[in-house]
Image 1 (cartoon, helix red, strand yellow):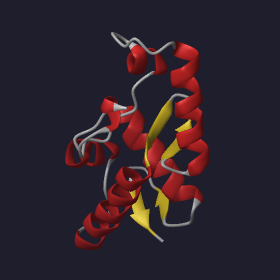
Image 2 (cartoon, one colour):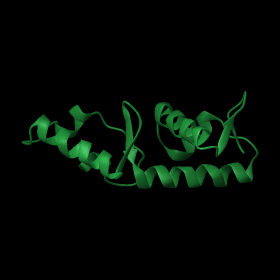
Image 3 (cartoon, rainbow, N blue to C red):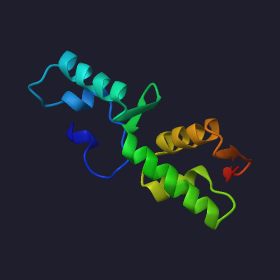
Length: 111
């Protein structure tokens, strides 16, 4: 799945995965679901699915940035991770659920 190659934190739609491919959508969906089931890809929301290694790296970086400054905003996370707002919010919400961060008026703080 070339869409997930590289270091970028991306969450392509399934339609984008088979665009221009000779592989049919059901086969790509099966492989995609297999990757989610195995933990290679992580589903943060219905339409936000990223590589587990990208997620782990993002969480580590956010923790590092929060140790350097007490608080971080969604836009700072988005910019530092070079991703979009939807993915940044999904990662931060997961960190909140895991008890790593807490939401504030301005962004997130470490617990």
